[in-house]
Length: 340
Image 1 (cartoon, rainbow, N blue to C red):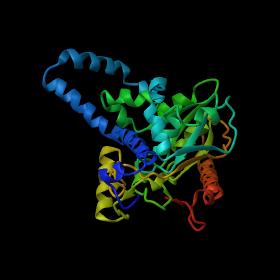
Image 2: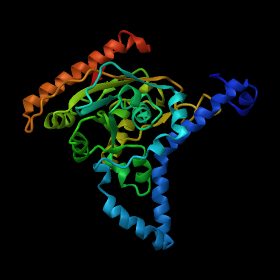
Image 3: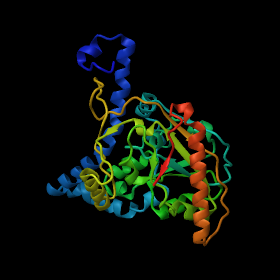
Image 4: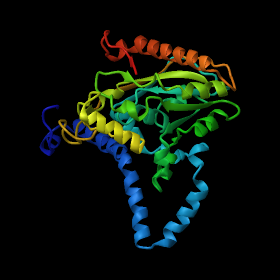
C-alpha cells in the first residue's frame, strides 16, 4: 500500500480497504481550514470592489463591536464541534487522549502542549471537537485552545474558527479564562509557537521553551496549576524540506515568521488516493498524554526568581513525562527532548 497510488488501486481493493478513502477525504477538510482564511478575506474584498455595501457594511459594523470576543472566551458552537467530519478526522490517525492524573474541577489549569508539529493536529482533535475523550476523562472541565491572534483578524474566518472553541493566545485572553470563578477551566497553550513548527521533523523532539516564561508568570498571577502535555506522534505526520539552522531556507522562514507572526514550513506527506506525495498527513497514531499537575501558589506580583524556579520545575516535569512514556509509543531509548 505504500508503493502504489492510483484510482486503479482504489477500484481493485476490497471494500473494507476502499472505506479507508473516506477518512483521508474528511481529514482534508481540516487541512483546507488553513486556506479558508484567504478565501474569506477574498470574499470581503470582492464585496467591497463590487460595492455590495448592503452585505459588508452590516458585517463590518457588527465586527467592530464583536472584535474583542476572541479575548473574552470566544463563541463556541456545540453543533460545529460535533460535526461528523471531526470524528473521521480523529479516527484517521487516530488521535488518543491519555490521562495520568486526576484534576480538581474547583481549580483552573494551564495545559502546556508539546510539540507544536506542523499543524497542531493533536491539540485540535482533542480540545476543539466533541469526538475526543476529553469530556469523559475530564468531566466538569472546559478546555480553551489558545491560537495566534492573527487568525481572529480574518473576517468571516474568525467566526468559523471560534465556533470550534479556539480563543486568542493574548495575555488578556488567557487571564480571562483563568479568572473564571468556580474552576473547571483549562487554558491549552502550544508553548513552542510558530518557531517550533520549523523544527517539526519526524524523529526529532526539539522544543522552544527556554525563553517561554510568560505562561509561568500568568500561572503565578492566577494561581493556576501547570500541567505538561506531550503529544507523541505529532512530528510524524509530515515531512519537511531540510531547513537546518543557518541555511538559506531557514533564514528566509525565520524572517517571514517575524514579519507575519506565523511560520511557513515547507512540508509534504501523502495524497488521498496515493501514498507517495501530497499535503494529506501520514496516517500515524497520535497519543496526547496529560501529565501530573504542578501546584502553583497565587502570587500577584511574582519575582524573577519565582518565575525562573517554576519554569525550571515545569521543564523537569515535562522531561519526566516524556521519558516515562516514550518507550510505550515506539521512541528509541536514546532519544530525548532538546530544549531551545
